[in-house]
Amino acid sequence: MAILMTAHKAVDTAAEAVEAGAYDFVVKPLHFPQLLVSVERALHLNKIKNQNTTLKVALQTHEGTNVDGIIGKSPSFKQALDLARRVASSNTNIFITGESGAGKEVIAKAIHNLGPRKKNPFVAINCSAIPENLLESELFGHAKGSFTGASEKKVGLFEEAGDGTLFLDEIGDLSLPLQAKLLRVLQERKIKRIGENQYRNINARIISATHKDLRSEVANHTFREDLFFRLNVIPIKVPPLRERKEDVIPLAEFFLKKFTALNGSSVKTFSKEALEKLLTNTWKGNVRELENTIERAVVLCTTNTIQAEDLTDSEVFQSASNGTGEGTFDFYELTGNRILTIDEIVKLYIKHVLDMNHGAKEKTAKDLSIDRKTLYRKLQEMEKMPIGAEH
Image 1 (cartoon, rainbow, N blue to C red):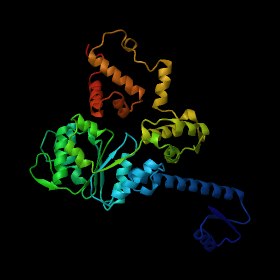
Image 2: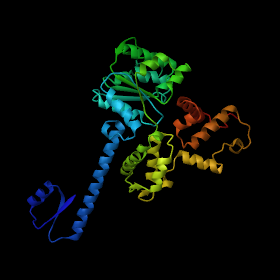
Image 3: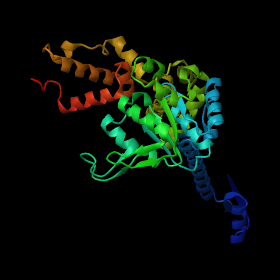
């Protein structure tokens, strides 16, 4: 930004200076307090512009509209993005695989925004996050009065997506009855709302994703083979962050800019030790874990440089707890030697693992080898009947 000093007090001169790109102007003889105010305002405006630019890029990246701004220079991630570009203009079903938090939805949005459907809706649903009895209504819609609580008619997501894209995340968690209904939709390109006899044509492109190995699910008869082959026309694998170390620092720097802008923080950079820690971490939660770690560091950091000790995450907390004995599960300490029922033991252990993971339900379900729907149901039961209520 430029501040012009002039001997002319005319308004026209001031207007010409601003039009030429000057932020402000001061008149001779120089009045230093006035110059100081102009400089402070210029610096403040420049900071706001930089923050707005960062937030705009962050929003566009999150929504998938800024495809060129997707952060990833590792060969494996660039290969996945390149395949996304090549299939974007087709109507073929796309099947994206990868661990939770690796960026499957980023690839799905890139496919949508690189293709001819980009001006139409991109509708996403996490199939594991909605109870099974509500998921069918979410997908297909329902007629008024078709079941208890259906006080109004509802348009399902297949219709809501219109001529755009429907992204079915964590499709591996669909129940077998819903799998059968989805297969029929993919074959006939028609849906029927719950409680209606009328079939409605759909035109949405279907992109599905899962963190599960669906070939194993097919072998175990928990996922339909015919549906798997319908979905898996063009497979795209998103590599985990631990296999794309080249992306860790660029992603961390992007998240640093994002969260300093959001929080009005003065944090500017990482220390050498912090960068080394970022690179050596296994990032079991992938990009989502990295983002959460940087956000936490920005909020907790007391200087303008993030240090290694600021980069606390669930893995660090767990290893620290195990090292001091605080991470062990002691029935007697928790219950005062009272005999527990089997249900109470299950509830206590779920709470223990959830606490170790600092409330991260997805990781807790994975650690317990149960699906998220089961975990949510257990947590709801725990709220309704606290431990000890049986006695």
